[in-house]
Image 1: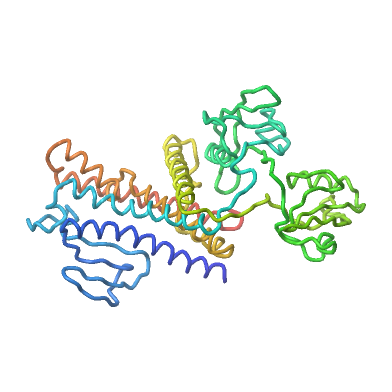
Image 2 (image 1 turned 120 degrees about the vertical axis):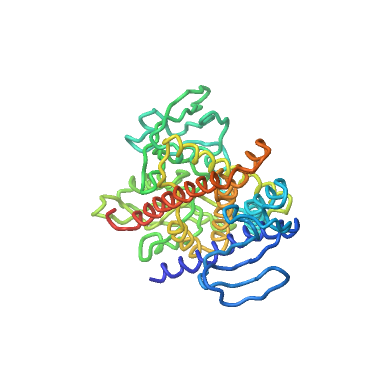
Length: 439
């Protein structure tokens, strides 16, 4: 109950702010070009309160879902009166800038948020930005069938040379059931391979069945009453070795624990500037047939504060990369090489927002930035009634050197509206199905 309420409140606020930022872009540029703006509204439906300044009614409406800007003569289907302050009375280049201003604001907001996050707390995951070295391969997985081995370093994936692990995993996630060309370096030899990721989870995202070689592991969670807690291990401890054998991944740690057969093991941990030797006696989990010490592990993560110029460069790099992934996903959807289940509706966004809010404000702000970026990009797609569609029609009219007839525009908008309604219904249905037990 609490999680559902938290998700709903956070999502309403987040999407509301993003939509208002988007609409403010249209509003500011329209005002600058002398277009009469009749309404700048927060929410939809009946007007609750507000004020009027000049020609614009600044209002708060009953339904708190985003907002909108209403410009005079904006809808070509309503006809024009010839008033020079109407949207359609302005030259096409001005209408182009008004249309693109909304998505631009969302992209700029994403860049600004990520820059601020990196200035406050830039995460450095040891393996994520370094060489993509295989740490573990699951039996009978696509990676195993392609003869990928622990220790192999991926030197190219889908034509990209020397990729980071994040770039490798993003390519795999977007390619369920599709062959992905990679090359691995094994010793001094570079070997071409072809991996066919399988669709996993309710999102049907691709998985190769491999794990990265972590640059150290840390204790993410200590289970109450278990051997690790009794030995004095704490969350955040970096696990360096077990019985003198260095461990780099959670799998390596588990393997060493199993070798103990329940005998005490000495675990070296790093806690801040200290290095401690803890004696831990694993307990047998009869139900699983394994020995456990009660530690959930994660890759070692360090944080730093970046100066503004470096934070901005990192933000631009991340946003550019995520934009490319968005375009690639859409291209694969059109080619029927990816599942529409990888897209999220407000339902899926709400669940993600709830989890992010529980993790902390930095995680929530990063999610907000990514949604803002996606909102800006999606609005640029050439679908009529969206900003990209307006831009497309303006381009066609510029080439034709005359306006498209109202009758043709009406048919185009009707078809686009039906398409968007059907598309939204499918994405919402998929998100609801993901959270229904047994679906």
